Length: 245
Image (tube, rainbow, N blue to C red):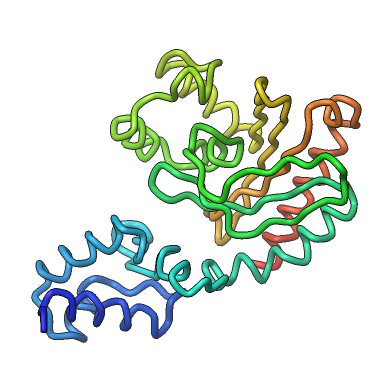
């Protein structure tokens, strides 16, 4: 048997015993009689591949989205899903537009739940999308602490002209993100598709854990009461927050 594979599987099983409760590196290593350095290296690989997710620098590790994807298990972020389904279904019924719940993973936003309207023309977006390419991704990035935003920019660079044409420099990017953070709202116009995206944050215990967004054709957005639409989106996010807390 290959020892490092066994150790990686042991770590996954240990985390999966209680997948939503973060487990510290030291606790994981000690429970499996692993050298702390060896354990850290294995976890680093599992995090990079998406099978494990690190919650902060000290809180520990939980299962990542890829672990659930392997079994087509919708339990990823189970608390979020349980709190969001009913509220998002109600929002879609009220406004008759598609809604999306998403979380941040590296330089991507990952959709973990969707609702669909009964419109003849609907806007569909992929489950995984680069952060800069979506209102939900931009909002999640904007709500990160400033030092994490700087690390993100240093690692992944600025958006391309195609993904975010309004942003041409780091200063413009930081200004745009700061405005989203202040307003707790991201608006995106996808001109070549005539699509509008709107996103707001969802909080749990004072931290932003997800984004709630609406995507719709631009012509329907322009004909709507925009303030009422945004208010409905914000209210849904608040209702999810109450259920989470």
